[in-house]
Image 1 (cartoon, rainbow, N blue to C red):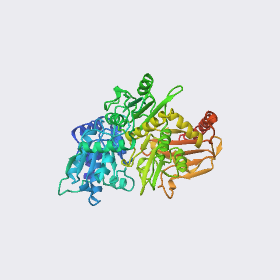
Image 2 (tube, rainbow, N blue to C red):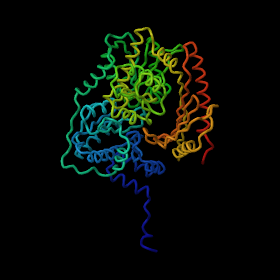
Image 3 (tube, helix red, strand yellow):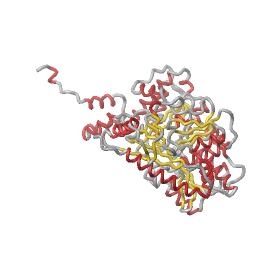
Image 4 (cartoon, rainbow, N blue to C red):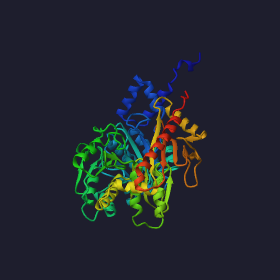
Length: 559
């Protein structure tokens, strides 16, 4: 027997654990992982099998120890990578990084870790002093001419999550190849710095500058008679949103008081996303009791906007696309400069394109996400951009979605209509009379079991390779392989099918074990007297389309 046979083999998982801990995990993270090593090896293996990856402009995941979680060591590794990336750009370290945070449990600690790591790497920092909305970070990046921006937030994810969002020097979410460069640097020590970076706390004048810009665009000339109900869903938008509404000319704004103060537990909602069923229940109840005209809601980091309006049978939450049509119509009727464009994504409604064509303005269709939508105007200016997931960019001062400025833009439109005895619902009717009913919905399949992400990706790939001949009883007339890219659009996993009056986009999620399909049916224009019948017919066709897609997303189990 050789000497090596006397030495017990090292478990690869234990070796991974030791290597991770040696990078500087703090005491609580160390204790959590060592407890798993002793009691739950499967869970420990899961945390090392799938480390957080740079996805939607950064990192997002559960607050937990290990590579698969958001923790101080993950944040330090990411920030060291950002520092290395910035050192590759002359002047960027001195221009500095804007750092902000929301009010989630770990956000203060993660922001402090980010600041300390940047300073040690010789990167100057401009830090927002208090928890605040995400749009303030890209705004400050542009206003200060900073080299980058970092926002600690998980947006509308569950209370157990947190995240790390990265902006480049333009104030736009990073895209390839920068995200790939940053990720490649994770785990490497930050380059040695001969001089420590400078640390500046952003003063109140920056917030005043942000407010002034929004109010210059969207404040009213006379006080509004609208009765508005607002909720920030336990997030960080409350004080800023209500202050903006008051300054813009809306004296009658009632807030859902139990949801107004930031609370990382989100105690009154099952899921802190205003699109989720039940999230707006308290706001709608308050609106009904007050006879309100409009409900506005931000998600917890205030970069998204949800809207509800009175309807014959109570209150109706508008689809993200419908809010996009309203804002698009309004902003397209503002004076526009040459070269300005509007933009939306491949999974959003096609109505914005019709509105833009009618106004003689170019409409750009991008990949999903504001990291692409915000770039649609380059080298010109993006006048308006939106995605169906209730994200809206209404002013170029913020090159990302902004639920605060969008709230003022939408309220301005509602007020203009109310002064002539009309409503947002009336304008939606007008648009579908003139441009046709645009009915939309989503169908998805999720698999949270082991290997689920791979199975969902396999389903999406199979549908791309073997498209259906018909959907909802209508022949598929066109198949577009999104993975092949286009002259004005990078490749992305997914496929687009078109029928005579319908469209389906199928794509795997980049962050979840899910495959999603986005459906739209477009009807012919017609007079107001036929609108109800045309909507009913569109919904009937949409239901048939959804049934076909649902069957395609649920093939025989490949296992």
